[in-house]
Length: 168
Image 1 (cartoon, one colour):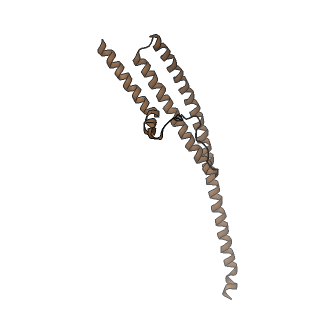
Image 2 (cartoon, one colour; image 1 turned 90 degrees about the vertical axis):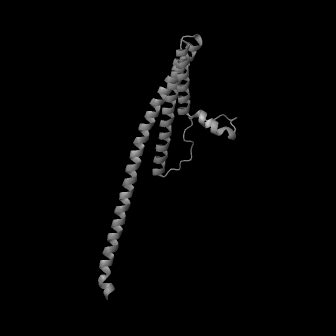
Image 3 (cartoon, one colour; image 1 turned 180 degrees about the horizontal axis):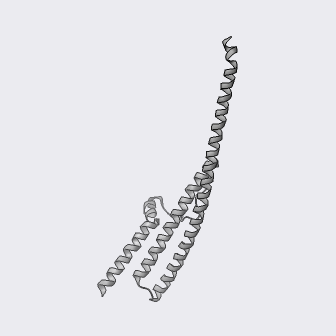
């Protein structure tokens, strides 16, 4: 008798639970859609930034090549050449960091959409030579780091400035 009396109340409670579950699912779907939209626009902005930085990197590399040619002709001091190389290395580092950030955003975006991310993150990043031995990976990684290379070039420029000033 009680179950017959409470039947409508139980049906109403189950209906309310179902409606609540629908609203929660809708809320999660909308949150995921908003997250995906936000990541999409972040990805597009990062792609534009990476393109701009790549252009700056290519410009700096062209300037470096011209400076090296002028250096062989005697038109540029060694310190100026090292400073140009350092600027080129810093531009390349900034571009590579932007590409890495772009790859992370892309992975987050694809994960949010439920797409598997089984691809090479960036085919334009420099890779070691095929002849590289695994025993030399530590040295290779340190040599390939743009920030370490930039510090080396800065050190070379300071040495050049010191030797130039002491030769006077």
